[in-house]
Length: 181
Image (cartoon, rainbow, N blue to C red; front, side):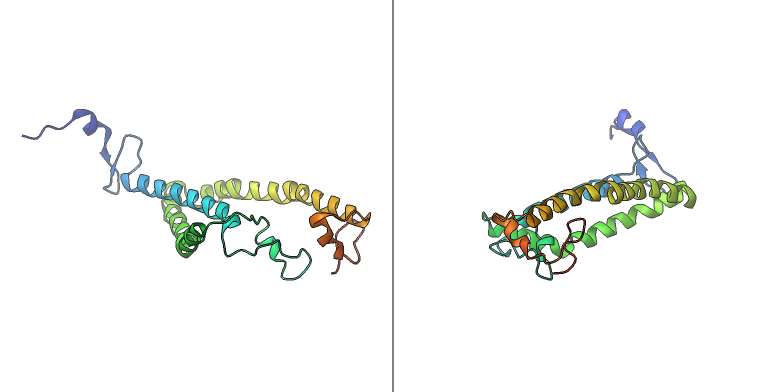
């Protein structure tokens, strides 16, 4: 009595674990988890984007040279704020990182079974280690160039706007960084 669509019957098959998979070998559960991981990544980007606009931030920029150096936690503070971002960020803060670690752990074991320890480690080092080394030794020094430029401006006596807060540097080293505050 039931008609079975032959196209859909041909496109799905049972895997070795007994899970129904499509023609590309991806199970429906795995596809749902991958979609959830994509949504969590978008939520993490939104969380970090909204942090400049939450009401609980200080009204002005924190001092540049006073410990605990709060400007590093929130380098961008905008005067336009909305309490909705506070509520959303507070809600996301409760579970977002834990969920991301949980989802990443779900994908490790199938990858280990599929590829083996050696291939898994080589691929992981290439995927995570190479960008880490490039970012640390190539991009981070480029990040310090504006800091050096600002410190040299301060040493020359240019004091205007936010740069005036940097003038508390008592003894810059030969590269323009403040050695002690």
